[in-house]
Image 1 (cartoon, rainbow, N blue to C red):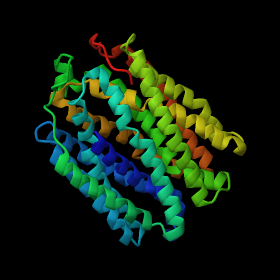
Image 2: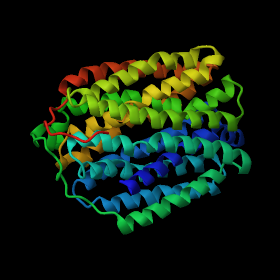
Image 3: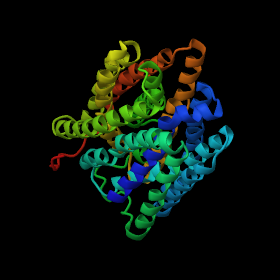
Length: 399
């Protein structure tokens, strides 16, 4: 758990260095907003193309060597960024990172699910996904601070080395649990076969609710430091520091609070994982509107509130996805989920936002499309609650 959490942390640090250093990169390569958004598109298109294969491998072969391959792959690609000197080389580099992330991001949740029963997975995955806000914050800070001091290539170099070190420790100490050893729910055809995934409403609603949410989150995370740099007049380093600080505080608090509420709520309502996710997105909507279209004086306070509410769903929604399927197809289900959330979510949202910004000459209007995605996510998650699987009545530890 600790080693996988460490690798996940570095995974998200690497992903968010780019938004933190984005104005510096844009200035050197004379790129427009749509081109900068296309870098994130390159990562996730590669991610999507590789995910189906890695999911198939993960249900048929040992997952530990596959996790190690992914960690080494993205660490080496990150290390190589230090020698990038043109836009298209950076584009290819970012695409290669997607290959590494498409392995680790699929196998780690499946491995953790085999260590813990259904009722404990929300608690465990809430801790595991603390890496998202902490890693994002450190990525923003590294990109903005180190990039401003030593050039934008430096943070990529410094953040690559720890990934190789933790991968080596995991190769030495990590072990793999028996598949399905902790599953309590029946392995029905809808839950345990590939074809069944497409008629499994619990899996489909959680997946597409998360896809709409990911469209918004991917776009916001890619552009928020740049938005504050332009709208609030903050320097590149101060904008990345502000977003990083808000992300790490809200991410830790929101993820833990959301996981705790869901864990308690599960004792009386098996729909809790879906319902807490619905309320998380619904409460984010008005705060996000204030960030993009309110007074500049309200941008940082509104962003603080929006991110807190947004992170409430991190553990519960990922636990809902893992619990909706059984061990024989869990890696495949996670890979299909990742394909869908990136294909319909953040693969294109940064580029779409950049294109709208270029044409309207206002990043506010570009970011405004994320509010529509949040409304769609709310509707899907509310509908999905009725399909939540009934969990057993066994007692569970406190969060």
